[in-house]
Length: 300
Image (cartoon, rainbow, N blue to C red; front, side, top):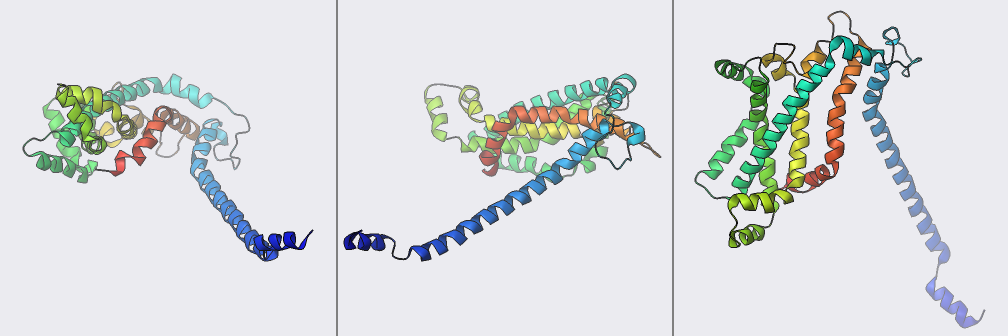
């Protein structure tokens, strides 16, 4: 190699050993920190899903094996699920919950979308005052409203009626859903609304054809939230519904908890059945839900 080539090589890398000593420790530290982060996330994930795994495995055990130190059942069995359907008639309670939840979610989505659009894009007297009054209801815990709601539904002859429970759920879920939809509608460019009005479209036409398709992440978000809240609600359902034919799933699950002993395989089997609809709805709306959390849910 000539002197010029050596000079050029040294000019490009004047201290190759020094550079190597600086790069290798930095690269090693990044690998170690990334590996440690992955291990922490893995441990947190295992800690989060372990109760779910324990619940499913316990539902496959025999009752005599409930308190066994072995998490995995020695002889997996579906006897607990058979007991649910044949003796507990869980299908009736499941259908009641599906009916109440579906009607509630549908009504909340429709009413919240209309109200959210009105508060976001239409000017009318007292808009801010009405909006703040509706938001103030979010500060009231549900337990405070049990007695007033019970008296009101009793005057309307809606105690022990799924319609009364649905009305209570709609009234409780509407303010938050309306606030969320208003946040989404305010993120839509106002030029689209102005263009629709210039083309002669009515307010309902603008809402239905322009604004609503753009607010699908918001609809998915309030659908999941309202579905979970309604499906898992216990206090109102246990207070307002008395007949076994009207009872929803959550009060029926509570009846499985015994005073002195509990059939844990049957209880965990019922809990496993109860989470299937929630997981299904989330998987269907997962993409729109994540978009909603990262977009309009933090604006407004």
